[in-house]
Amino acid sequence: MPNKKFDYDKYLRKNTLPHIWCPGCGDGIILKSLIRAIDKCGYSKDDVVITSGIGCASRLPGYVDFNTIHTTHGRALTFAVGIKMYKPRLKVITVSGDGDALAIGGNHFIHAARRNIDITMIVFNNYTYGMTGGQSSPTQPLGTFSTTTPFGSVEGPFDVCNLAQAAGATWVGRSTSYHAVQLEKFIVNALNHKGFSVLDVITNCHISYGRRNKMKSPVEMIHYQKDKAVNVRSSENIAPENMAGKFKTGILYENKGAQEFSEEYYKVLNAVKIK
Image (cartoon, rainbow, N blue to C red; front, side, top):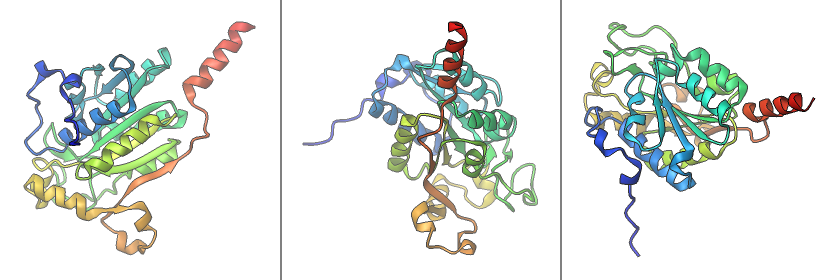
């Protein structure tokens, strides 16, 4: 029996299309993987909330037919926390670019992780501020070029996954827009996790980042992702010096036993009310 064709239409606001993303942008692949993952989890559209800040990734909520909110720069998690605290039953998802999440939004990122609140955050990590001119972002690799680092970056980049785990996130993973099947599986896993889950998705911006770093086409950037990604299990057999310039993919950390913030908050609140 042939596989039934997946019905994307029921999850899209078709009146908002066509999208604004550049041809070949990896954000569309992440969008499709997210839709398929939500469908696989069986969530009602009315029970899903997607928040975003500012940037290319932030336009995603406008295209999907869930409860969605497009907020201010760096504040996607702030709104997500408020929504989750008001209605803990909702499945809250935040999509954010690397600059939106870790620069202006960095403080919110580490405290959401510290609290271990039940929100899934997907970081669209393209190493740049793609929408506003290709400036250097907190994840831009050392020595690479941007409009604000024309002679090469001398700042060490954040590792999204290491930062998330150190701050207290209880599920941490990484995939790429090249590994679309894997990406869908990881989103399902992150959504099913109870606690703050962070999925770092290495994606391509060939317009703002690639052109300045000898990768002028989507195909070249997709090959970059394929060549630089190393499965976390395989990385155990690779000497650290041979991992230079590469990144680990997989589920990098998972803690199923940690207390979740909104649940614990309401326990305390109910105990106070009883007294």
